[in-house]
Image 1: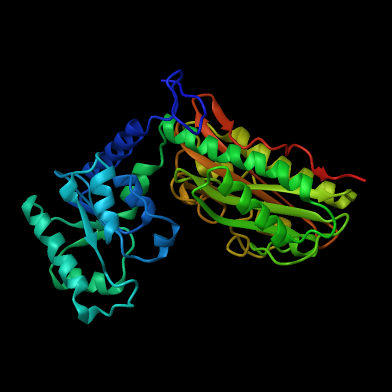
Image 2 (image 1 turned 135 degrees about the vertical axis):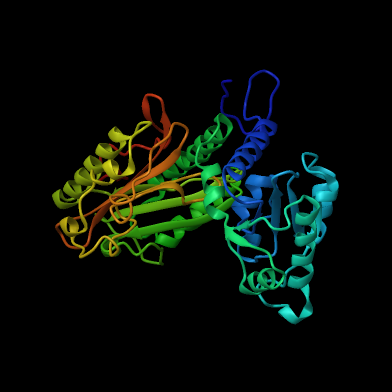
Length: 409
């Protein structure tokens, strides 16, 4: 079924179907669990919790390690949430059984120490549920976990295994609703880059652009602006992956990365712009970065393997680094979805010897970086693509075939 963009539901055309989205994600997780040797999945990663239960209570919970969810082979998803959030789910999340929305607390990363018994109580409850489902001896797949919880599971005799691989298997192929949400998320950044291009003038600071980006994205519907990289002038080489209060000057190369989410679905979207004019060295660097990314996009198709894509990019030594580890993330591909880094991960560091197959329905970002011969400028480009039967369809649309000159003199 076809869908069209829109931030609200309407009666006159088909848009994102959230019931279908929830059903698809749970079915994918069940199939991945069934294909594994696990009896259940116990997840603490907020992206996995959202994938299984379609619940979220805000960015603040991402590093608290207090929310968790359980999916057994024979049961419905269960979620333990922060206090009254569980009651909220019972009232407003009818796709979950009310009794499966429970209040939970593990101690907020040690602020309540283990002797308080919260870990012991939680593990005893999980063990009882597994027994009710005939899974007392089956391994439990866990994604991320606090050491005291891990120790308590071991003490209780629960067999643990790697559940993150199972969840990433489930999440790697997107349905049309996920693809539409990823496209809408990218469209918001298209608009943001137009605003950045107009604002990018001498005297503006990197942090001013970051403030502009946060305001624009949140007012246009973002639910999480995770990070805005703003890098200019001599900070471009080497890439520092952050922003400062540096004041932008005429002739600067500036590149930005916008990482945000819309209904949970993320972007990773670099663009490089020059202020006023560009030197031949800056233009040459951009041309090379564009050639490298175009070569990799051309290779994207179902059945292709990631080693072939990685080989389209220069080796570390070809652009000034000693090893692939030293330059990891500069010539790079990574899956996008509820998480910023899903499958496939594409780079010379891991893909040459351990290639993965590209599948229709995957969505991932491809990014390249080229330092300029002036010793301080550099070009950074990133495109998000969805894999179709006919190859790659690019989701990121702000002009990037040539170096964009903002406010030319």
